[in-house]
Length: 290
Length: 318
Image (cartoon, rainbow over all chains, first blue to last red; front, side, top):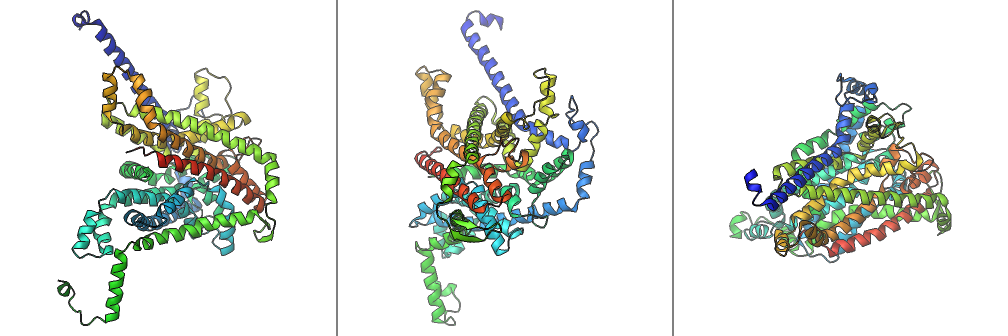
């Protein structure tokens, strides 16, 4: 090594400089990702700790004596179990509704030249830019008038109205990427339009279905603004409201709250481990606007 | 051929076969597209456009505490709104919050995307890290509020570490001090948006042809020069779009504020979206609350138009 450096000192200088910058930037990368993950890890640990350990100085990173007390506390509170159930009911309904409507609309926008179609698509995008808060007052007013305040259905409709537009874009993005030759061939062979849609387009769009369904499900699952305003009791309140509610208590029950948040994050953990690829690709497909 | 596939043509009444034929013809015509689009359009008309219209009506009428729409008052609320000091202060807070958000999320999002785009790191490692870095984006705001509540607590992790490091000797009240609270909330917001910015910028970086960089290096440009001369100009349209999107999201933020600070301390985190909630739901002044909503809506409409105009011009992945 040393023999080599003498004839070409400059080159060695450059490569060691390169080595230093590379390892530095890799360390920075790891640190940045670490910092991003810190709040998540800390909350996960908190669910298995006692509150005293949580705020001790210096704080133990891992729970010194892992305990399931917080989870046991939640099991004794049927209220939170019911809220979790509500979250599942609402999110599955929103996902089903959005996937159904968005697939049809995405197909219409992708395969037909509609008069005013581009304008319609742009208008659906506009709704993405509204703050949900700017609609809560009329929404509350309407749901109260028609008796859907504090019901699953009211919240499902409100959530879906905000989630649907992007789902349409996601499906349109997916369908645009599937060549029309295949369905045309099927139709030449005697299949009807709907038959071709069912037998040829649907299977090819499966990744799009998964991505859109996850997007809609997680959107409804994580929603808080509509939930806290359009529901009042545990008959319809989803679990996000339950988590937020803990903050309002006189003494915040940190570990119990962390445990609830952990249980409430189960669906997205599943998505994260098994289906993340679909979601990220789907969102990019929806964001590519032509 | 068609006779063979249809085994009982004689049994079909001519009317039903006519209807089937018409249906098939319709399904193959361009007009069938409207049929596919109609359910979504009707849904959005009923559940987005109608509430929006109702909001405008509520802002121009007297609305009782119980929410019954009464006498027409026209634009009477608007002069009050424009002189409402609490409202103007809330607008400034919203703008500040969004500005912190845009700067923080873009700077860190771009840095992270660039780091993940380093060609010499194996794709397996970068894909794994990218996957992990997407996580903050997936959690509910309510859960994010809790995570940061734990970290920023007076006796929380951040304060204990800062004290252990000797940086401070008394714990900082991150969300309890008026001049720090808004900034702390913006930090949580940035944490949630970074992954989105990173994913989008990374996709755009990967689409830049390597030949451009090779050509530049043949011409004697160093890494720094090709970064400013090639990378930045090529992702600029996307960055602009992302900046506007983040800005609008910032203005829409409600959950974080509602959960962590409830507008306090001393109104220091009462942004516009929280002010709407307060006027409407805490004082039941529905008409005035609806007026603020319409105002916010108009502002967002402006940014939405700008966003659409810019994203129509830039097609970042082509």
